[in-house]
Length: 279
Image 1 (tube, rainbow, N blue to C red):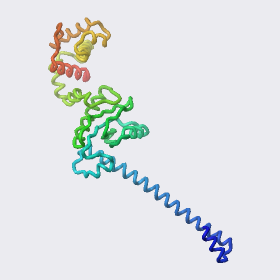
Image 2 (cartoon, rainbow, N blue to C red):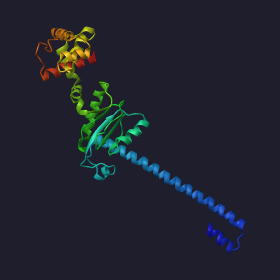
Image 3 (spheres, helix red, strand yellow):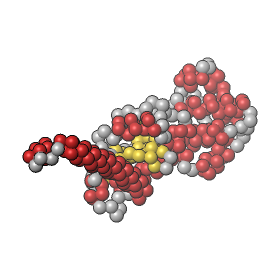
Image 4 (spheres, helix red, strand yellow):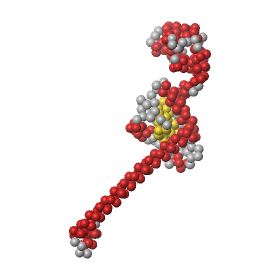
C-alpha cells in the first residue's frame, strides 16, 4: 500500500482516487486472508478426520485379523512396531467427555485406543497404571501383534465374567482365568450341577443356604473359622450345614482333617456357583 501511495502521488493521482483504490485492495486482501485461513482450518479438520478414521480402522483390523497383510509403514505411522509386544485392553465405554480424558491418559506412552463395537479397546505398549475406579477395565499380558485377536477374545470373555461378578476398576485377565475358562462351558456346568447337586431344590431357601455356605467354605480354603467369620455364624453352624449338604448330595467331605482335592474343589465350586447363579 505504501508503494501504491508513493507511485500514485508521483504520477499525480488525486488522494481520493488513491484512497478508493486502497480500500478496494484492502477488501481483496481480507477476502484472500479469509480464504487462506478457512482452507487451512478445513485441511486440519480433514486431516484429523482422516487420521482418526485410519487409526480406528487399523485398530479394528489388528484386533480382528492381526497384522497379516499390513505393511510396516502402516504400523509405524501410528507408533506401533511390527516386532513389538502390546497389552490388549477392553473396557465398557465411558461418556464422551470422560472417554477423551481416558484416551489421553492411557495412550500417553503410545499405542492405539478407540471404540470397537460398543466397547473401549486398545493395544498399549505398557499396561495402564490405573483406570477409573467405577469403570470395569480388563488388560491382558503383553503379546506380539500376531496374537492380538486371541488376546482381544480373551479380554471380552474375561470382561463378561467380571461383569457377572459386578467387579469394577482395573483387572488382569489372568486373575479371572479359571472363572473365564469355566464360563465358556455352560453345558458342562449344567451336567456337573445336575450330577452333584441334583438333590437340591433351587426354590428351597434352606438348600440355597447350604449351597452358599459350602461355596464360602471352598472360597476360604475349607477353613471353618474363616467361613464362619464371613457368614457371621458359629463354626459349628458351618459344620452342621456342610454335613446336611453332604447327607443330601454325597459331598463335599467335612470329616475332621478331610480336605477336597484340587479337582474335587473345582468340581464342587463350579457346580455350587452355577447352581446358585441359575437358581
